[in-house]
Image (tube, rainbow, N blue to C red; front, top):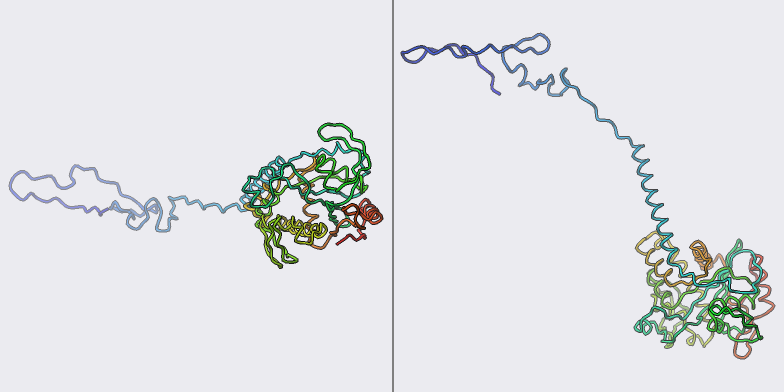
Amino acid sequence: MMRQVRRGATPPPGPGPSAPPYGAGVPQQPSYTDGQGHGGDGYDSGYNTGQVYGGGGGGQGPGRQVRDRPAPDWRRRIKWTAITVVTVLVVTTVGTYFWADSKLNRDVDLSKVIDRPAAGEGTNYLIVGSDSREGMSKDQMKDLHTGYAEGKRTDSMMILHTGDNGSTLISLPRDSDVEIPSFVGSESGKKYPGTGRHTKLNAAYAEDGPELLVRTVEHNTGLRLDHYVEIGFGGFANIVDAVGGVEIDIPQDIKDKKSGADLKKGKQTLDGQEALAFVRTRYALAGSDLDRTKNQQKFLSALASQVATPSTVLNPFRLYPTMGAGLDSLVVDKDMGLFDLASMFWAMKSVSGGEGTSMNMPISGSVGGNLKWDDAKVKKLVEELKNDEKVTVSGNN
């Protein structure tokens, strides 16, 4: 604003009545003071020096109240951030648990198994790989070289024992000579008396499913099985693909038209199709079922190790597809929980890491084309497993 200047009366330029002096008749403006008794006739009273409303350039004049901005309460912020993070983790964990638990196919009822051995120390799982083609298209069957047979049969069987003295993984050759005992039909509920009939172990599954297989293994070993886990061809391949493939050292060149295997010796990463061909290969190994079980043990342990790595567990984009692929294709007993399943995988990982023992069931020879178990060694092995002792018996490795 411009400073007001008082001017005197100016006479009119020409004749005629004189005009009133400038400012005449206008009330005199009050003088302003600077708050310390210093007056001034001018209107500005310090306006041009920035002292309007009692403040100077720095704004600390007597007419102005300045409030300092409060410092941020970092303890409060950290507290609520932590509460939020923990809440999200809890909700996610609980949600994941119920989602995963709902996917388990608890179709096997071990309460139908009769004349069971007494329970021992530790936990025993019967892990079965079946040739089930359920849910697979004809193109998938062709790609995986599974054939088109209906129904399902056991392709691999293993007992996994977990306890305080390490884990033990024992392969049961499907050509094992066993006695089919008396049993109750899983569907009919009818009791079938034992006749002393001997056959291959995988025939028990084909005859009446998982319940008769459990009954047969328990009868011929004397070892009580606590849980049952089964996976089919398609599910196995899907898990391997979901985890990003499994690295394994192939012991020799393998070419098998029946399984579709065409693998070179050495360390490499197998996808689902290659992995399934590898664990099914038999005829490229001189037709030996014992050699095939070694490869199955080796691969399953490597798969368990791969699933349990931080790159899978801490990566939701890999963890959830892996869990989904695995849980959708697993068939377990009615008492099987997620924690039991997790314990099984960690035990298999420990076997792969050298902290446990892997072996084939001890074999003494053959009878009628079937593999005969070494009765004395099997008895000793079962005693050690029941008592959860360190296994000292050697198998046919």
